[in-house]
Image (cartoon, rainbow, N blue to C red):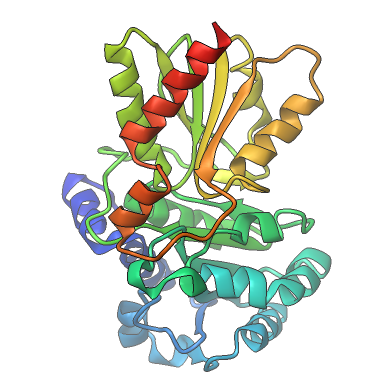
Length: 323
């Protein structure tokens, strides 16, 4: 699949779910082992293109997410590469035991695509928000967790997941017209973070849609004389230890995620830092431990103070406390 500027803009317009469906359709042309499964959400999962191209390779199990993981496991034992799709919270909470058994314990080559991570489902509300999915499954052994920053990275992560031998959870968030982080093609490597901006004072580690917000926040802080690096942690597990160790000379390490601050990216980083004798303080920015009233995607980011203005203000305030 070729990624030029036109393709990147098109994928951005489609959003992460559309980018996933587009990429899966393209790679399935070359790999007949790829199968798509849906819990009665083919269109919502971005699978319309795939279904039109390969109707015989789509399995709709109905509203039965737990069973879908079992079916995917069976398909995997036959040598197929199943991509099972549903809402992030349904996959990680409703099907957590099945993920633990078939993916963690049995190590079946299943790819779970959890869409609607964070606040992507907008007015659908808390019942459809994926705010605890990473923390729910991060403790499961042998499970790789990927959270793409934009739609190009979503497509590349889909390709990488298909080629990866082992269980993968691909977390998708955001809405259509997703902000572009990567304007040019680049090398995507599972488990290898990408430093997008160099800086000396603050080390910002972000994932998913918060990568774009963090880049904007870094620009604001630069205008205030505060130099920030921004690193895209697209793979939450296994986390890139080298990237975190490379930030130990910063005055402050910041994690930014559209996920609960309990058990997500910030917690993963703090677990690394806890084993080190000398390390800078850490600021965790994410979803606070509360359920606020539902609204549009942009409204929810504002309400939980996850826009770049709030991120830069939180970092600036923390710096003042450290002086």
